[in-house]
Image 1 (cartoon, helix red, strand yellow):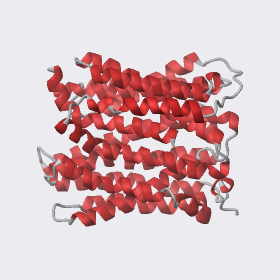
Image 2: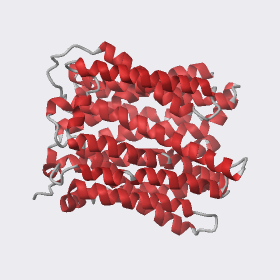
Image 3: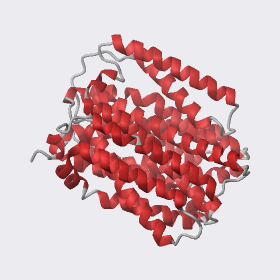
Length: 453
C-alpha cells in the first residue's frame, strides 16, 4: 500500500497539471501554448534518471533510495506550488521528475524482492490500480481545484502524502539490496538518457505546434542514433544499465513487446475520452470526470479477481483472451454519441477498466517470472523505461489519429465522428498484443500464478 500510494501520487500529478495549464499561463503572463514545456520537462527528467534506478537501489539500498525519491518528489511539488514564472516551474518539474524516476522502478523493485513468487500477482494488482486511476482522476480533479481553489493546490496536495510516505517507508519497508560488484555505467547512462529523452520529446511534440516540426524530427533522429549506440555499447558491457539480454526470457520479452502494444493503445484513452466528452458532447469537466471514473471503478473490481483468473487459466491464455476483450471494450468507445444514456457509457468503461487492469497486472507480474533476484534491478530499469516510452507513444498516436480524422472530414474542431477513427486505431493496436502472447509457452509463470496447483 505504501508503494501503491507513491505510484498514485506520481500518476495523478503527471495528469492533473494538464487541466490547470491555461490558468497557470495567465498567472505567469505566459503564452498558453508554451506551457506544454511543463509537461515535457517532467517526462524528459523521467527518461534521464530511470535507467540508473536499479544500480542506485543496489548500491545504496532500496528503502533508502525509495525514501529519498519520495522526498525529492515532494520537494519538487513544494517548489512547483511556489513558482512565479514558467522557467521556475520547469526547474521544479525537473526535480519532480528526478524523484518520480527513482520512485517508480525502485518501489516496484522493493516489492518484488520482499514478496514471494506466489504473492506477486496479488501485489501487482495493488500497484496496477493507482496507475490506471491516476490518469482518469487527474483531469477532473485538476478542473475542480482550478475552479474552486488555487492552481497551487495541485502541487500542495502531494506534501502530506509525501511526508506520510517517508514515515511509513522508514517503519515498514525492508532495506533490500544486492551486493554491487560492477562499476556504474556512465557511458550507458549518457547514451540511454539521450535516446529516451529525445524520443519522448519527439513523440510528445510532433504535430502539436509546440515546437517547429524540424526540431521534433531532429530529436527523433538523435534519439534513434543514441539508441543504436547504446545497443552496441550494452552488448559489450558486463553490467549495462538497460540489459537487452533479459529479452531472452520469454516471459520478459512478451511483457515488453506485447505489453508495449497494449499500453500504446490504452495510453491514449485518458487523452481522448475526456476531450471527446467535453468538446464533442458538450459536457463539463465535472460531468466528464464522473463518466470516466467508471474505468477506475473497474480497476478496483479487478484487484480481488486477478489471482483467481490467473490460477484458473494461467498467464498465456489470460493474456490472449483478456487482451482481446479489453481491445473490444476500447473499440466500443468509438460508438459513443451524445444520445447514449450515461448508464450505457458507465457499463462499457467499467467492464473495460476491469479487463485493462487485469491485463496490466498480468504483464507486470509475468515480467519477473523467470528472473533471478540478481537480475531484478536491471529488469525494473528496463521495464519502467519501456512503460514510459510506450505511454507517450500512445498519446501521440491518439492525437495523430484525431488530426487525420479532422483532415479527412475537413473539420477545424474535432467532432464525434473524428473521435471514432482515433478509438478504432488505438483499439486495433491494443488488439495486436493478443496474438503476440501466443509466442510464450503455456507453462511459463505457473509458480507465480498458481496454475499448476
